[in-house]
Structures are given as structure tokens and as C-alpha cells.
Image (cartoon, rainbow, N blue to C red; front, side, top):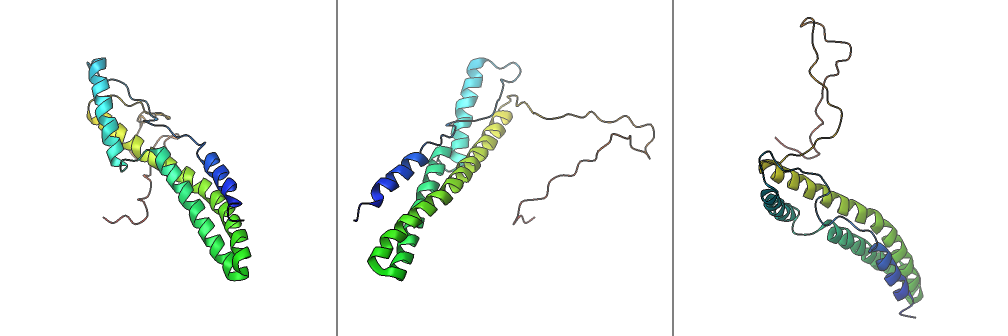
Length: 173
């Protein structure tokens, strides 16, 4: 009776471990002008170490897995507590099973967000370090040359002003 949910827990943990995140940068950086490939490799190694330190020494995969397991464990504990409160011992087992399933479902979303967020932070730190080391970082998107104005008072018909994004929540100057 005690171990009925153990296979379900193992199945959820196994399936949760199937999501694979990159183990390094997921961005392209090219060697800087007049840099040898060996210099570029040295910069790459140093910047990978720098980026790893910036995300707290955990990989995106580790952050993803920890989030998934934590959510499943919290869901199981809350479900067991709720089941015990409503129906005693038998309700605790049912509640733990329902809590595990709910926690695993919520954990899947949390796992993705934790892994993706960690990877984005890693990539940003890596790009900053490589750029500061004199390497080239390709920029993707539409580039617009500065418009040729016939007069200072009237912008051209295809001119679109740039508005920077708002600061993140909680930002204080």
C-alpha cells in the first residue's frame, strides 16, 4: 500500500529528465579581426567559465531538473496533507497520488521556464564577455540605414521611430 505511488514517481522523474538543455552557449560568436583560432578558443574557454559563474554555477539542465523535482515533491506533500485532512490515512495516499500528478504537471512548466531563463542569462554573459574580448557577435534582424531627409521638419514616409522597451518590474534608478 505504501509503495503504490513509487512507480508513478519514478516514471514522472524519468520523463522529466528527458528534456535536454544545451550544456554551453546557444549563440554564435566569430573570431575578432586579426585573432588566431587559438586566441579565439582561449577567449571561448574563459567566457564559458565567466558565464557559468554568472548563473550561479548551475547548468540550464540542472536548474530545469531541480525545478521539476521540487514542484513534484511540493505537490505530493500538499496532496497528502489535503487527503489526510479530508479522509484520514486512505485519503492521504489518494491525495499524494493526485498531488504528485498535479505537481508533475506544474513542474513541467516550471522546469521549462527555469531552464530557458538560466540559458538566456548564460548566453547574455557569454556574449558580453566574448564581445569585450574583441570577438564578433552577429546580430540578426532587419537593419535600417539612416533615412535621407529632404528637410529637417518632415521625416520620410518609411521612417519609424525607435522606442526602447520599458525597464523590468521593480527597477529603481
